[in-house]
Length: 316
Image (tube, rainbow, N blue to C red):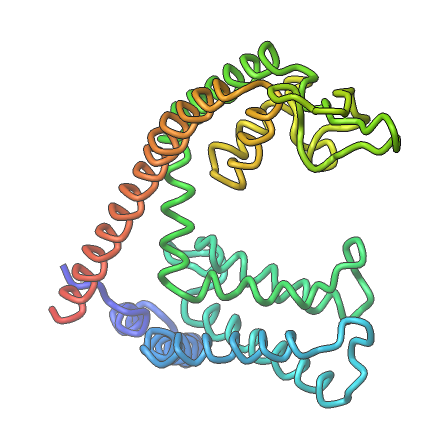
């Protein structure tokens, strides 16, 4: 079944309309249809997306060289900002004319990425009338348009969002794992990371390393006022223990934590961190990344098939 355009439908109903009314309706419909068709050809051209991306990159460069302490100090920066705002507005107008704003299956507002673009441009106009959110420059939100313009970034964000339900079970396992190891660390090493060597003669404390598993010599092992890393590395409570476990699982300077524990507790503490790294970092974290990767691959494959189907329909 061949779908007719509005002009062909008016031709079919010509006999049922009065001449004057029909002529006016026909020309209004013809103007609207031709404008919409021209804008549709324009936005679906491969160069349109490239042109929009060039505008966004150029705008990001202008925002990067702007002095945040004295915004708008140069007249050319102010004029360039107006030009970019006008170009973004023109892009929205062209898309709305081609797709329709609300009505229709493929209307402009039905696409979430178009909503993001519309909100960003709207915030740009609000900044001109002095509206701000917590002192934030709303014009800087234009950099987010890179996500909605670059197809690869769009697919990546969509894949990450769609993979969230699949990650719930893994996140529950990770939470249980973090809590278990944090409680184990509290039971084993509560307060021992505050131990330091005190020089009795001078009264100075060596705060560079913990003590307890080795002799301090002519010095005395005492409790210091804080834990290592300005109090950030400790197993004194569950919250601090979970943060340390997270640090070790992500392998972010975890050897520093292990060294302090071994200095305060003994070499046996290395067993805890060895199991910690093998189970948490090499298994659970990689398993979560594998789920995300599989979802990203599936999203790319679905988009590739969708593109092939669209190209076949256009050829036919």
